[in-house]
Amino acid sequence: MLIGLQIASGLVSAAILFLLASGLSLIFGVCRVLNLAHGTFFMLAAYLAYSGTRLFADSGAGFWLTLLVAPLLLAGLGALVEVALFRRIYRADTLVQLLPTIALIFIFADVIRFIWGLESKTVPFPSGLPGAVSILGVPFPSYYVVIVLAGALIALGLWVLVYRTRWGILVRAIAQDRDMSASLGINERAIYTAVFALAAWLAGMAGVLSAPLAGAALGSDLDAVIDAFVVVVVGGLGSIPGAFLAALLVGMVRSFGILVIPQFAMAFVFGLMALVLIVRPTGLLGRKES
Image (cartoon, rainbow, N blue to C red):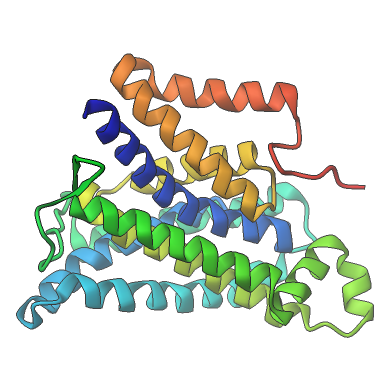
């Protein structure tokens, strides 16, 4: 039973990590920008989950309405940030790209302090769910099942979008060769804006889904972006299937690491990253750029 619960915990962690890392991987793979502020969208989503559940409390479906609305708001914010800021620095030096993202972290942190204050917020679990469900005779918290199913469905939808649609073909063409794509008449600006909006939506989904488990707190953006970078590096920069596989590995290593030696749970995760980079420097499914 204990092993089953740890597997469930690992799958929940993997689902959240994938939603975070897939957006970061998309931004880097297509736009070639290391967006350190990606975790800020995750943190904003958690605070929006807190306010949304209170705002829609009378409807009886506050959490579910928030899960629908908050990621869409963040998608719009992501598109706005891309148009106003990132569009001007795509071909700049790496340091010039990083500094504005760091500025965004501090700006949004101050916005959160102004609106929600300094105290951490708790988000209630969604109503209407049974206390636990039994899988192979092992009881699991029903909300765990919701997160895992949501992560799996979004992963499938993202794979179809990127690898089975015309928009996905354009995205992969730009990721592979910017100059050739521009010469073929592909609207790079529209693709970049859409990619940022999608990445912010994914971070918003991760933030809202994780809010009942971890609450909303200042500083969670740093933890989120570090976790996302670990998954992206292990899976391979720009690879969505790699992010999925890496999220599963990191989630399981973290879950069982806490069970074995809680003090070294994160050490196990970074040890996994180091091992993967030693054996395969491009990540599990990453490709060496020509």
